[in-house]
Structure formats: structure tokens, C-alpha cells
Length: 366
Image (tube, rainbow, N blue to C red; front, side):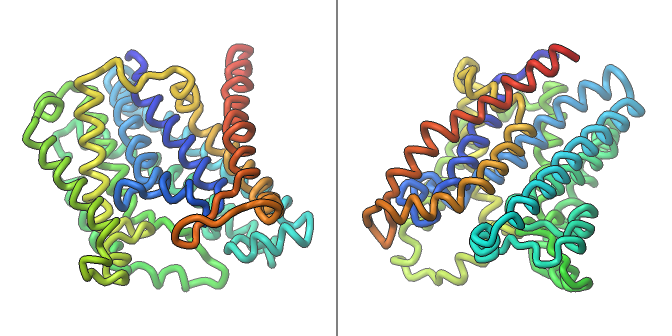
């Protein structure tokens, strides 16, 4: 199976965007344009969906050429690897934060603290404590364990029942009924992403990847009517996002219907519209979205994502000091922080390329 450079590009692009937004101050005027700028959609939705789509392509190929037993072993191996990265990041984050009082104070205010490190380490190792920035990889590891079963069912023409069950689980979870589970044990925290909701996005991507491998998505590649509907839907959400309060819509109601943690229906619909627009264009212009430097980041997505967490943990507290040295106000209580922004753009984001450089050499030696 030939490598899909467009998938590498989008994984790389959204990884860069995730890193940029996580490193920027939340009051940065630049972040106001790079975070949810086209509606209620972030890079997280794209990253989970593309992860599912990529898994659908890769494991469909492995299932067809090497069989069910092989993809079970492969998916478990990948899940264990992701879990290993998560555990290493957890230990690193805990040690860094506990290394100094300023670190502890800064991250405690942002809901990332280790006041009971032994207990939290034990909970974190079994995925029951997932503070900010440490809640994506555990969810991805769990989703990988679903892949062999789902691919097998897709091959038996049972995609509809799988997606119906996934949709029902999503509807129940997105209604917040499952939220009290987090209160069963003291100190348990599953992160902001409700995995029972986000599994639907991953499985949709997985199924589309399966269909893509078997060349069963022809009608979607050139359906101009769906494209027009997607554009109209995306424009409606953009207008509501920008002018919703001026149109008399309740901010609380909008926040509930577009909640990110539960991937509420309007957010899911908003993402679906934008995703189809991108898919339609990329399918029509196959030479687009293949810029190799960005593809390189996407090719090492797990390693780059992990490295970006390291950068966030180390540099975010420093930016508080740098931002206090020099900044000036902009619109709507936003600010421009030239020192930290320059450091992010010209030093930290380029440093992401250290990851593929290092790991490509490791792979060549092995």
C-alpha cells in the first residue's frame, strides 16, 4: 500500500497548530485567529478523526494481506507503545512540576497538580487520572484496541450495527449521564475528553478509512451537492460563532450545544461539514496538501505530539515572565505578546523537526 502523503500532511499540519495553540497564551490575539476560527472546531477533532481514518486504511490493508490474528497483535502492540509514551510523559510532567514551587503554583492554577504524587501516579498508570495535556494519548490507546474487532465487522458487512451502537453510546454519553462515574473514586479524573463521546468520531474515521482502502467512496469524491451543503453548513456555523450573541442567542445554550469535552452534536456537525469540504478539495486536487516538511511531522505524529507536551510543560511558565516584560493590549481584552510569540514561531515550532531527525536515524539503525 502506497503512503498517503495528504494524510501525513494533515496530521502534521494539525500537530503544528495544536502545538502553537497550546504554547500561546489564551489571551493572545493571535490565538483568537488560530483556535476555533472557522466555527466550533479545533485541531483535536481533526486529529482524532484522521487517526481513525489512518488506522482504517492501514489495518484494512493488514487485515486483507496478513489476516485477523496479525492485526490484533499489531493493534495491541501499537496501543502498548502509545501507553508507554503516555506513562513516560506522565512521569516527566510530575517530576518537572514537583521540581520547584513556581512550577507547582503555575500548573496548579491550570488544574495540573500533583499534591498526592504516589496516588496520582498509580491512578495515572491505570488511566484514572488524566490532567490537561495528558488525556489524549490514553484515549487513543483505548481506541486502538477497538480496531481489530471493528475492521472484522466491517469486512462482514456489519458496519451499520457497529455505527448504530457507537452512535447510541455517543448520545447517552453526550447527555452527561456518564459524568457521575468520575466521582466513584476520590482523585479520579478522566480529562476533558469524554471517550464515550469521542469514540464515535474515531470509528467514523475508521470506517471511512476501510471504505477508502476498498475504493468504495467514489460518490463522495465528486458529489457537488454534498459539497454545497457542507459549505452552506460551515458558513452558518461561522456566522453563529461570530455573531450568535448579537442575534440574541444565549451564550450558555451555545456553550452546551457545542461543548468540546462531550463533542456535542452541533460541534460534531460543524466538524463534519469542514471535514467534507477539505476531503472534496483534496480528492479533486491530489497534488495539493503534500508539502513534504509538514508531511514529515505527520509521519512521526506520536513522537511529535509527545515532544510538544514536553515543550508546553517546560516553557509555558517561562512565558508568564516574558509576557510581563513586554506586551500591549489589543481588541476585546486580548494582548499581543511579541517576545514569547517570536520564541514559539522561530524556536519551539522548528524544534519539532528534531523528532523526525532523531527517530529516522533510530529506525535506520534498527
